[in-house]
Image (cartoon, rainbow, N blue to C red):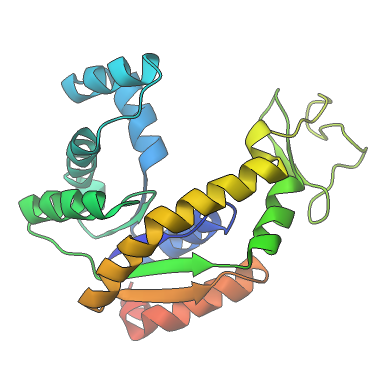
Length: 219
């Protein structure tokens, strides 16, 4: 099964992608991981990516398409994948179509997770991370034993700059502007399903499971 998983920052895409992969027996293909692996691997594509990353520039869409196609050609993706982080624009939809066409496969489902803006802001503003061991906490759902201190290594926890409320709301506005046309494109193709991302991870996972239905039971 081949799935594109969309949704705004903080809606829980990473958590649900991991659960879907475990249930369906497919790989999680994250654009962030693809970029890191390409740079570290030193392949010809990776060297091109490094030039943009080290120059502080966005990686061009066409190059991202090549990276995704290269990743999906690997044996572990032959049974299927959960693609997270791409496409984010209508132009990227066309690029993904081209990459999948070269592999002679198509997308089975596009799920878009949604949640109220205030709920997403609450989730992200409450997040704290450890700069030492990279452990992640939340002031409400997963607080450290001692306030402001990492349980694992004792470092002082920090709030990332992109987890501040004004930055989050700007990111959400940009997401909404770019993603609405993408959702419209997949909606016209009849593969888009909106999933309520509000609630705990088990509830959201159950909604995804129901949306997939019997197709996921054979995995």
